[in-house]
Image 1: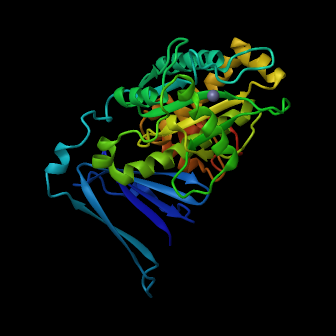
Image 2: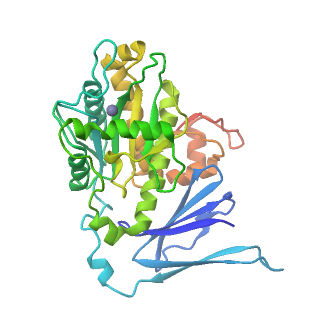
Length: 385
Ligand SMILES: [Zn+2]
């Protein structure tokens, strides 16, 4: 059996990713409250990977090992949760507790000021489009209970990549969405793509690397040195590798959610998230994605990108993806998710569990019967608990 286990803080939790696994157990039968365990939840991270999250009441160190199959028992993964002895670790944890406060999303409009970004055939500038979409996205987020948007750039001025990253940190953002519109010499190319930061050692991606070079060059335009390495003593010392890894994993998860949402209404250039070393995505410890909403170099798409109706649609897709993501992460109250889109492998039972509602209430609300098959892509109304 292959698995990953790691610890995350604020709130304290242990995450276990089980590879090639399917959920057959009924987690609801767990005896709670437990002295250590607060709750147990799970979700599908990607195909054949089950992510289990153990919400714990206090800092624990997980110790895990595999037991071989015996006559009496199947193969087992045993996880010991050892309470942390030292109080020291507690004291140096980040001050802002993410448990109760609003989820903060940093919305980064690409380029600005003397850096126009890409320019369309009819002279539409990327910096203008990205700002308008960013403002629409922020508006939607701010209207949502439990969520707050921070615009990294509010007007047409230059912000260095380093400043952008700093601001994301300063506001204690839980996620960053950087908005761009790409350009290519071939004018017929269209569609969205979503980028995440590459893990070192990941397969180099020529297209992604070229784009990263282009976007990173923004700082040269503004006369500032490109960000080589953002100082991260805070992250290095406290959150460590585990948080970084979760940041990347959740970026990937979120990137996929954005792509799924975009695919419903817009053309997609690459249907998988791409990876590159974007300076603006170096905020490792939170999910960060860079969305190239379309190609401004394609005159037809340029015309669309200019329309406020289309800008709103693009913003809405990113908004829906964020709500979906934070709901799945257990950070947004389930009652705020009004709809659930059926994914491959979803069961009524699983969905009910995910939203903390009963199967019968979903059945009732959607006029289903308990045996009915769910269709991938079907939108289910969710009871408001
Ligand atoms: Zn750009």
